[in-house]
Image (tube, rainbow, N blue to C red; front, side, top):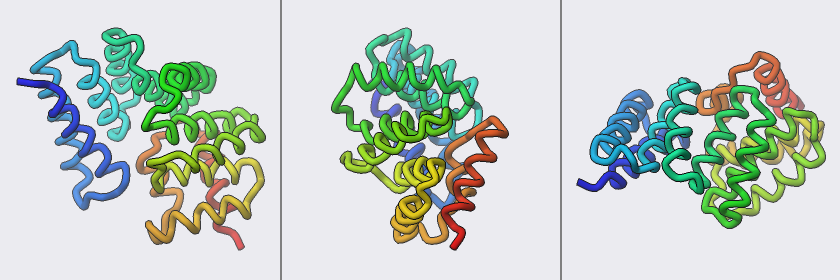
Length: 215
């Protein structure tokens, strides 16, 4: 057999959950794990299978298993940009801000025109905002929204980044754009796919959404 179609099927199920396109979140997550594991049964040395498994673990809230799978992917292919970026994304959600800068910065250098460039920029921007480097963060958030493929969850990253910088009017405009596609989108939707672990980070995210939604 060939492993990558199964890794691809895993990622499709991950995206169904991530973009809230499925009515059965748990089944999609279970399928994402099952397909990634099938990919690795066929070829345990294919980094894409480990990467797909890491994304499924992340959405299930198992960030340590997600990190382990990403380290496996990177060990197999040290130039695998999307795995380095994903490791930075997990680091952001764990509050490991310096590691996030390091890994996402490296991914951007490896693949400057990556299909996930919007996400790399968005994660890097929100990480900077969490570190208090708000002006840099806002500039990168603006860039992220100009990239192809940017979806409503990425727009939410930009909205939060602006809100954390006190630019609540711009943040509200972003939130309004999200709600044309996803009516009622709020902090619970955000935290259903972004598994932030540290209480100070969660407190700041809740405040960002309160600021965006206050009149």
